[in-house]
Length: 147
Image 1: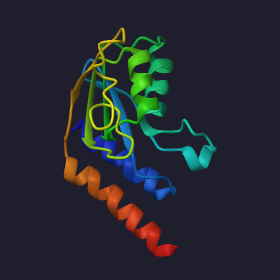
Image 2: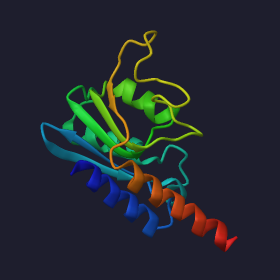
Image 3: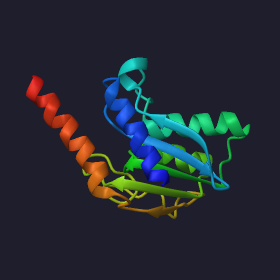
């Protein structure tokens, strides 16, 4: 259900010309924030889906510690976003497709479970992985076709 909402955000990102990645933040069984990529629109290198969703969740909840929240995102987070999850004290991450080029919660790095850090968070991998991966593969296939 929540990954489906993250996929809706990814589809919206694609409709506005962004890389189709979406995220939602869930707290106490309710979605408190949604996000999608906005790097191109905002000319902002931090405009990743999960970064936007976490920032919105913190604003809505009025606190930066999100220790009772779960982030659902369609692509494995990069080091920046995994670092933000660490800083926000996220309880759990659920992601769809792995990211072989930038994945930082198990693929290239594992910021979710690094014993040198003062916070660790649970990770569930591969939820609706094929669907999450296909939306990205098709997006980049179409993009390369236009070039």
